[in-house]
Amino acid sequence: MTELIETAADLEPSTRKAFRRLILSIADSKRLLGIRYSDWLLGAPSIEAGIAASSLAQDEWGHARLVYSILKEFDEDPLELEHQRSSHEYCSADPLDHPFPDWAAVTAGIVVVDGALTVLLRGLGEGAHQALSGRVAKMLAEEEYHRDLGSAWFRRLADSRGEGRERLTAEVAGMLPPTLDAFFPLDTAQERLVEAGVLPASTLLRERFRDETAELLSLVGAEVPVDTEPPGDWDPVRGRGPGHPDEEAVERARGDRNRALFVE
Amino acid sequence: MLERTYDVFARKGRGDALAHIGYLEALDDELARVYAWKTYDEERWFEMIIVPRSAIIAVNREDGPFAANRETAGREGGA
Image (cartoon, rainbow over all chains, first blue to last red; front, side):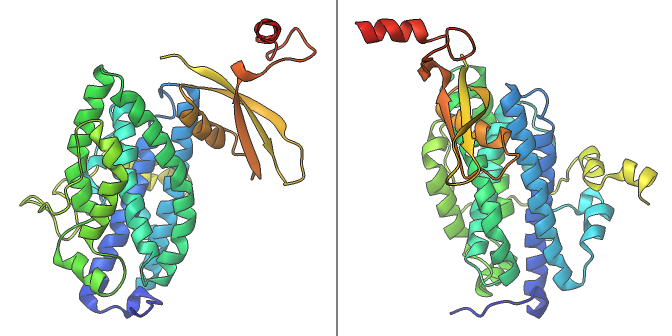
């Protein structure tokens, strides 16, 4: 049986580095996902859908805060990480680099990006890191409603046979590969985490994600590949592609303008 | 796409009576479930249910939001 990890500071250096990347990948993605959802508080297909988007955004920001705080185990100040990093240092998944252009993209984001993150969290809940596994339950309970909202809209758009279906199909195809590479990377850093018992192997998590989404994704002719290699320009330090989130989103995430006026 | 109106009922505790807390519009039951939970989340509800307004039959009133089906229900009942 794998030993429990009371603090990530106890991990050996290369595993610690991989753990830090994992935490930032989850927390930064949730921070950005919250911003992308919040963009649709106004302009959603109905008032109720806008309220749901707002609620999802709040959930994601709360989850991000919970996950960032784990970096205290490395004597890193989560507030500095939240407020002082440049966009080039963000480890968020590539599909969150730009705003979701329409509700089809929001729907694809809920099912693909949010859905994959949830599979990752569930895997961490089974893992040996005590603080992470302890915090996962609350997040997973809130994510149930994200899944229900995403799947309901996904079926609607996939059945629409119009532009909605075309847009959804394109968004899913574009989001799927970089999301898998970001949350279920097939590299040595991730293998170290698996060896330390932090989470199950990426291939197993991909299989779970594939099984959970198979029925929905088949509606737009997509499926989750289990063993794809990341592209050649993939950034192993940040665990994502070579790009970065747009500056405006990161300024909003950091709260630059208002912090300068009222806080600092 | 045609949205339906759903009425939302909830209670705070196991022994409490269900109370009408609001309404919403949704394209189907699945979306209505999520919208209800996310829209009326100001309390930690013990139980929440939704009912399509088209399924509500007014008993004594002929006016108000729930009276729309009264005539139809009467005809169906008498058939």
